[in-house]
Image (cartoon, rainbow, N blue to C red; front, side, top):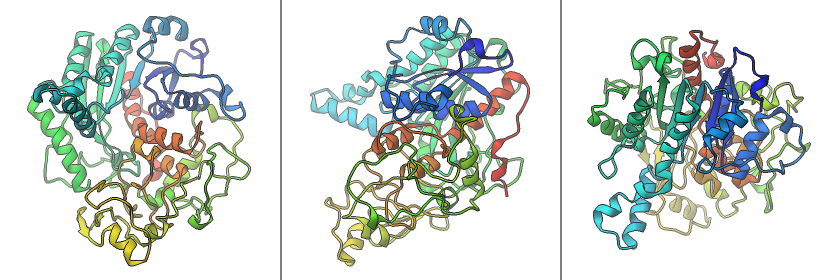
Length: 500
């Protein structure tokens, strides 16, 4: 990572809090920001960030031995400013505080635990507000108060806009930002609109300080959709709940990107014209075939190796070519094995390979096929019925449990949201034609991490880091707009190659 005294006066600097392996950092680096510091408490995620953003770390063979991990709760912002940043205030702070306490599944789990512990109804309903993760957004703002960036970006789940115990977390954060001298805006964005091959709905807060507040309406702070893509019904529902909660706030800071309910898009059409979404085949079609029958038990290495397989084809899609060419800052100028694919490893699941192969693309556990012509679902055999019809062993749990656990990708559509749970299993993302779950490199591609991005740790750890990350191309779309607002100059969009 570059030291402050190595940056030129024209550089824009960014500090990444809750950085994970570096999704936000990477998007801002591609937009021309210098990643001056990153804080992450998970040792392997911190080591992965260090590996990809520090050119010196790129040279270290094998794993990075010394821990780079730091806890946002124990790091002193004053010391960070003086010792790491050399007294120079960063231009931007970014971060995605852990979201489990705000997500509906997380709230339900915390409420259930509170009820089992004897908490009365109202106390159980607000149990998520007592979870330490719910306060990490305000810890983020503690750093803002000391580091005084010109702008900041925070990412979280859409449910952050929904009330809990009468409180609206997003409004509380915006109100505190205003008390610190910032003008804030928040909105909902889907990664599929920015060229990412994934339906991923997230809430973002963007704020500018004092004289850096851009002229014009807050709508102009946010990136226009690059891709014209119809959002499936399930994601519309997720967004509708969060959007409805935000509108009920009557908060002038909320930018509603879908005022017209009849529009096929969540957002205004791109002024550059219609660009099709990046689908699963475009994202994965050039990667090597993995034969499920050739897999076996044992550890899976994700570090680059001479044994890594070559690409499947020499004429990749525009998206695949972009993933081959893009680099994290630590890899720039390094000699890479341009014809080899690292971290292309997946799980050995012998009970289920035959069932995977006989599922329909878009089929989930209970038998619905995602991605019908109208974006809805059609009913087919359940996964249990598929297994029994071919004499395979059915899954050992009833159909009403984990209805979203099994899902086979549709080659012609972006994929469903990748979550941290893929670190435990990848049944939620079964390859559309190879009868297996996705590999680490395929998960990285679907999240828009380039092929040169290196992961520390093992396979499960890499899956979890990828699922937790902000898609770099999503971060890049916002970073380009932030850079333009701070400098008055726009850079060419590296995603222009995705246009037909």
